[in-house]
Length: 288
Figure 1 (cartoon, rainbow, N blue to C red):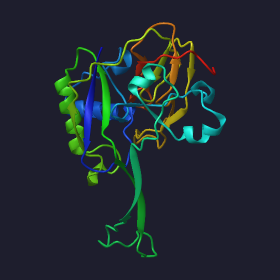
Figure 2: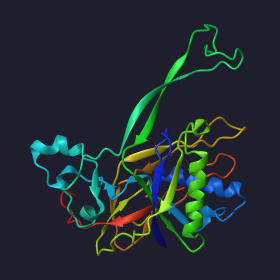
Figure 3: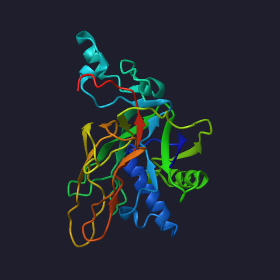
Figure 4: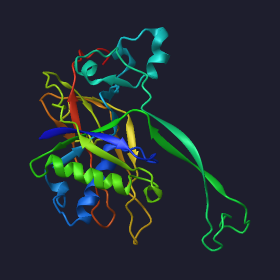
């Protein structure tokens, strides 16, 4: 499978942070709305396309490893925990003590008005009739985001760029109907892929399902995906528990990706992308 890097230019603030599984959901939805059924049997075949989270250009998240693995002095632990990012070169070369307190994005609380559709006013919808503003948190990216995309021969780089631009034009995530989550992308022609190393340790770039993956060992934080899928027959959803981005997996064989797709539909099939691109990095196993 081939890996490309897309440079993202945000055109608005975001309400939802773009994680790989959510980006895949928008990607699949766009294909289905266009009548394209290439992902129809997604749960029964090898993945045709895998998307990373939004990441700062040139950087990857700090691996989820014990603090002892990073050779940090006792007096520097508190400051080190604030440093979340490392350059791709430093990570792959095993320089686990080199991290930066990079501000990838900032969050701002914006006050909006609740609109009563019966009175066409900004009064609340209950009997009080009081003015009812509310706050909502927005994400503003301060450094260029990028998305890494792994795909097989069923897709072409040019059409992936077009689909992402279609997603960005319509808006990503929550409040896209009022103009949030808008962006455009272009392919980075200078990106030649990640270094291929002789190592057992790999970093994930998106939330992942790690069960039944023939893993020697793994280190991760958990992430709950509640999803939006429901239907008229039940009010309940089927949340899933995933290994969050920046998980570390120890494998006995070389692999380019890991994970699986999961059906979390209630009465109708509805799949979650639980795959992640793997980035190999040098590590001596210290602290494990």
